[in-house]
Length: 107
Image 1: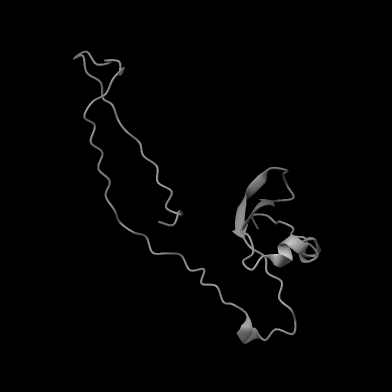
Image 2: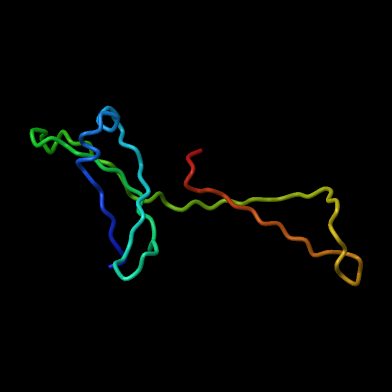
C-alpha cells in the first residue's frame, strides 16, 4: 500500500455550493502512509454522491481510459543569440535548448 487519503462526504453533501455544481470539481488529494508525515503522492479524483432512488442506468458513466500516446516532432530554429559566453577554446559554445510540453492540456 502506498498510502491513504480521507474524503469527508458529509462536508461535501451539506455544502450548498458543492450541491449546486453539475460537474463536480477535480480534486488533487495528498496520500499519506502511516510510517511518515511526508506525502507519498497525489491522487487526481472527483467525488459524486448519487441518491439511492437513482437507477443504475441513469448514472452517468465516465470514460477514464488513458488517451493513446501521440508522436510529434518539434523543430527549433535559432537565428540569433546574444550574451552567450564563448566557453570553448575555439571561441564557440555548445548551447542546447530544452522544451517542456504539458500533454495533459486539451488543445
